[in-house]
Length: 79
Figure 1 (cartoon, helix red, strand yellow):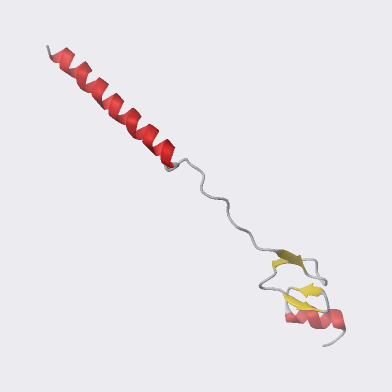
Figure 2 (cartoon, helix red, strand yellow):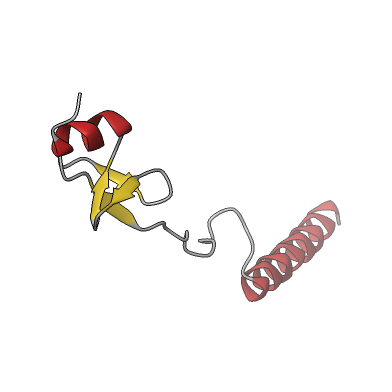
C-alpha cells in the first residue's frame, strides 16, 4: 500500500511542476529566458586617435568628434 501512495504523490508532484513550468513559459519569465534587448547609444569615432566613444561623452566641433579636449586641441594645432 505504501508504494501506491508513493507513486500517487510522485505523479501529483510531477503534474504540479509541469503546470508551474508551463505557466512560467507563458509569462516569458524564468531564469533562462532572454530579457528585452539592450538599447545602445550612438558611438562616434575620435578624429584624432580613432577611438570609439559614446556620443554623449564625445566633444563635437565643426562636424568632427573627439574623445577628449586634449585631442580636440591637438587636431586643431593648439597646445
